[in-house]
Image 1: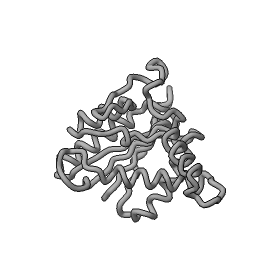
Image 2: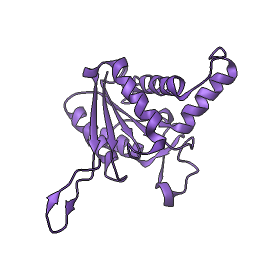
Image 3: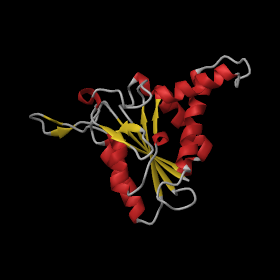
Image 4: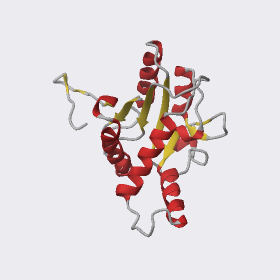
Length: 197
């Protein structure tokens, strides 16, 4: 399995979703089987109860999952059928880890962001990336992962750390990072500037 991680810097709304969808289409047209995961670092379980004025439209998946509209773009661009687990949120991860803690799965250990939350994120990505989404049997070849928001958001930090660790789990040849950034042209000078990003 190969992974393509799409992140964004400085400003949200730069087109990470369209970039991730486009990468997926290009890979699919090269003969690869592709899947996608959208990470939304908000505490909500899903986008179902969020105001469309604040977050945008909700996309309802075939299994009833209410997700970020990017999942709809992934489905249309890549001609795949995603499920609610293809949308990972902080709420889902913390709920999962807390349920395990209450069951005693951690054997009395102090449950922490590192390693428990970061491990749960990596396990979720690995599990969902291997589910077929194109009507064929077997795991896809490539998983495109979009990390919502910007890399500087405090909400994203556990996911960024989990993805940093993930490269060691899957091997450096199996994870590629695509960073989408604002490159403004500054007024009268007419020069492109790339800092900060």
